[in-house]
Length: 99
Image 1: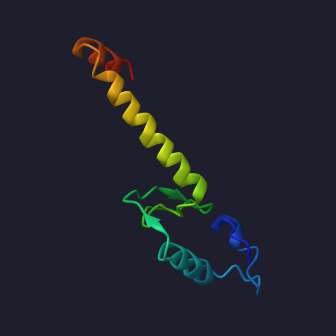
Image 2: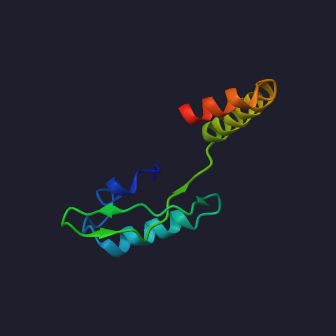
């Protein structure tokens, strides 16, 4: 099966029962997958019935395009560090305060 968001997964379950246990099982298999990267962030999720939970951590799969963007971010960050060494401390503080 193609990798689909969990919000749409229930529509692709074979028996069409929208069984919460089946959805939870799929979430756990994705979360504990070999390449899954877990974060320490637990967003507050709102359900349609008004219930809320924050028991599910955010995770991601390090896809090649994400890895490339992370590498580019590191390179740009290093360039900024190298350039900022030439600035006076007052200019650096002003820049950081403006952010």
